[in-house]
Image 1 (cartoon, rainbow, N blue to C red):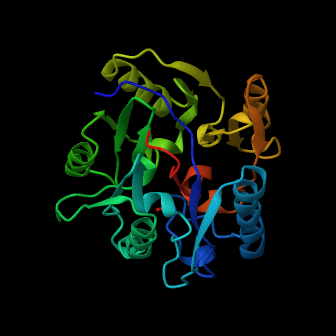
Image 2 (cartoon, rainbow, N blue to C red):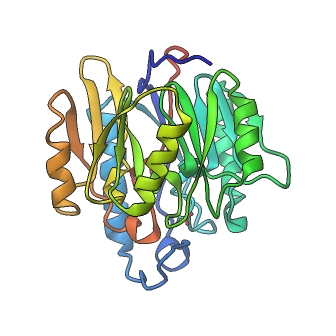
Image 3 (spheres, rainbow, N blue to C red):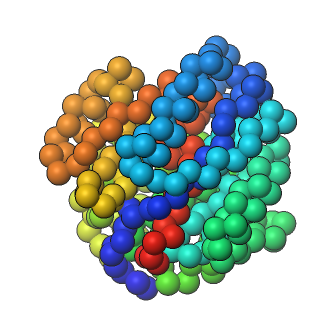
Length: 284
Ligand code: GLY
């Protein structure tokens, strides 16, 4: 097991894909009552998100073409897991999302990553269920991701320990947690999130620091370590989650960047879902 966090959060490229016109009506969602997605606003928020990664943080953007026939395709994170110079192309749990991997695989091939494909037809895995802490992986076993998917991930990233975490009340593992820095876990307060945290703590031989925030959805953040900027955290806005934002403001060593995702949240999208981050500068 590598057990190291050197290079954690260092990225040079972000793969993104624009919001399809089909998203408001056809994207999958846990709450069918969420039928009021404003497409124009979703696109403005996505542009802002990409703008932060490109202009504020200096990442090179690989902008995949919008595909209206794939309503969830803005959520590129689910199509691949990248760590170091290896990219595992997933087999998304929702049948209607499987084709999303094709163009993502091409983009990762063009970036000269080592491509591993999940060809076993009994396996499913969504990238949203994969939490990489810098020293190990946790994989949520959810409606989208199964044990076989987790085994194939473990095989693809042999340098790291992989533990599974049962998910009951959420779409993905990262629907209620993420990393806010090396060794720092952000976790929501719901019973489901706290149960998952206990499993993470039991399975790991490392003691993670934790930041507990009131709102599960706000616990999905993006941590980056950017040259000349240091620790950077993209997180939800005070307008969306005022109480959780107050907790983020305690992170005095971080450059905090609130990024709204009010519309895609209605179809279970969160910040990490909208990009695949890649480090071409050096291996982690
Ligand atoms: N709308 C995101 C998903 O259900 O996969």
